[in-house]
Length: 432
Image (cartoon, rainbow, N blue to C red; front, top):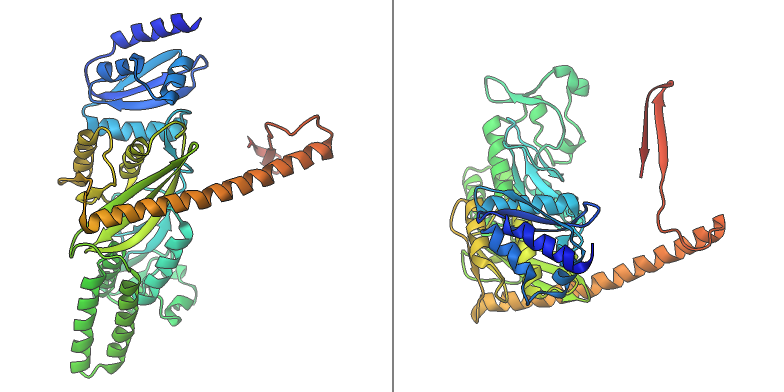
């Protein structure tokens, strides 16, 4: 089929699209998904791809497309979520998408247990748990959890610990606890040992609630409460506890001092800014809680060839908040993004309360937006250096492999096979 016939065929397919919200997919002749998009009105949105004004990447996508499909949704918010899931599933060539989007870590608090654990995870789905994230760097998450466990000791084991009639913890079955003694973490003062009844359910969960305040970035509220507890312990002549609380207060205040960028008192919002260059893109995220920047992350994206910063930012926001554990009431960006009303409706539904996109023109939030933009550009430069170094190492390794096995040139595809069995039965094979 020539280009003209293919275009006419696509336009005929668009004419049959309904005027309802949903998700549309452009596919090539082999059925591979080239692009996934969402729309409030499917017919009008897809028809725009055959108009006179298109980005270069969309022109190329339409030229390669052979077939159009759509999935209806009940609302534009459902369309946002479905679009994000389909992008993760198919990795379409012409979508701006997160790199390694399946591997971003979260912090999980297992509130469904009598004595909750706090751990790093890469999977969601436990409705009884609370999640924080996603975060871009697993190492930084581990460092934060290491500090958190020093401040507010909690368990990380997989023991089944339940509250007895008196509220104290007990391990079920008792034989699961070797020797009936707590592990090394108790002696390192990183766990309060509910496994042997060393603490009650209420006492333990109170400590976990403080850990949640720390994870939320509520450092000032946490410092005030800790200072009050310290004074009460001192008045009661419980000097050892008062000393422990003093050390905890110092650590919290030190954490607060490290957050050198301050915004408006008590504000909760996220700041996003994008940097794009030659098809590579990075989005910088600042999370502001109680008026203080409590965390910073940058996320790398691919598929941004020919895209502008507003488009990259809009695509990132849709994918990020489709899986984010929490949505703030305000999202600050340095420049207007397309389809802002649809995104605000989606974010409002996800949060369960109003969410607005703000493009500040002056003041502290403008300063934060500019700072995020500079950080995004710097992160992109560093990532490009790393990517080029990695590509150089890969090219060298492939040339050496070709020489070693006598190939005419570097291999384009390498397949690895392995077969496992249990004494000749239950044979399983895999290919990577």
